[in-house]
Image (cartoon, rainbow, N blue to C red; front, side, top):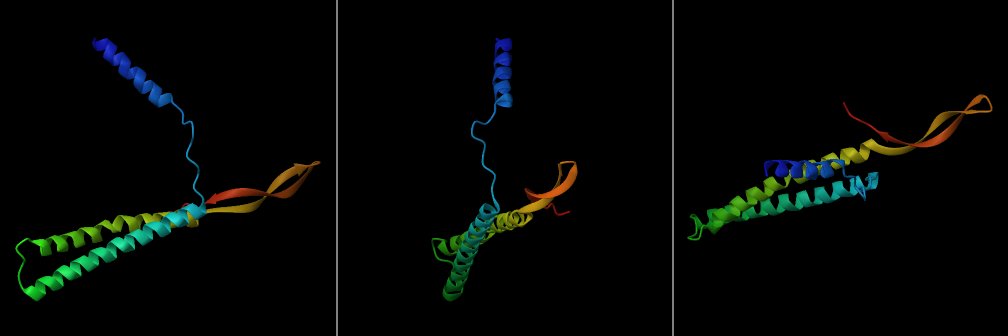
Length: 134
């Protein structure tokens, strides 16, 4: 029984390891990265402003009434605002990374030497440039 289970696990892992994608994911272009950056940035600002508004309202409400309400709703709004502001940070980081990827990816026509009739001639060839910052 033990050998059957081990051989079954090896068979399953072998099919997963040597399997190929039928539909590989398409490469993202510069415009895709810019769009992703703008969407992440907008969502980050929405989370940050909502969290700040909730925190400010709960602080003003606490200072106006001078004490906590019975339900603890004021503290809940304050903590929810802080959590929402903290949740905006990963979206700003992702927006920055996508913007850097968009900047580093570009298409250019580079002159490439070709041998034509025994002489070397330069012909333009489309190439993708990927700048890797060090």
